[in-house]
Length: 145
Image (cartoon, rainbow, N blue to C red; front, side):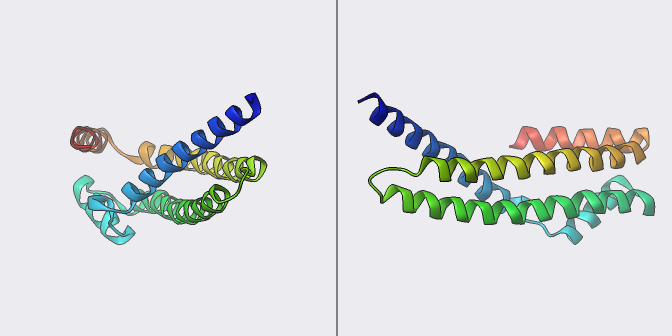
């Protein structure tokens, strides 16, 4: 009886986690965030008055984020398919699902480390007034969302 409850809890937990991933993936590519790299680059360059060196560092950040976003969309699709297949079976393949989540977590961890490093380089290239403008824009954005 405990094993059945545990499997149901794990299954429910996986569904909740998949739902969260789905919401995050949907919000990542809908609405005002759905700008291509060129538009984002142009807009940020104009707002912060970036020089060529700063633009190069920003380009690296944007490219890495774009590659990660595409990878997460593929992972989201594969995970949704696996969950759908598992929901139709009598017993969840917990090991396979955990392995998929482990792969996603590994990819995210690698992305996070690279993104923080790349962003730190971009941030260090900004002067005080540019940092202030960036902080102000970020503050406004977080209040809206």
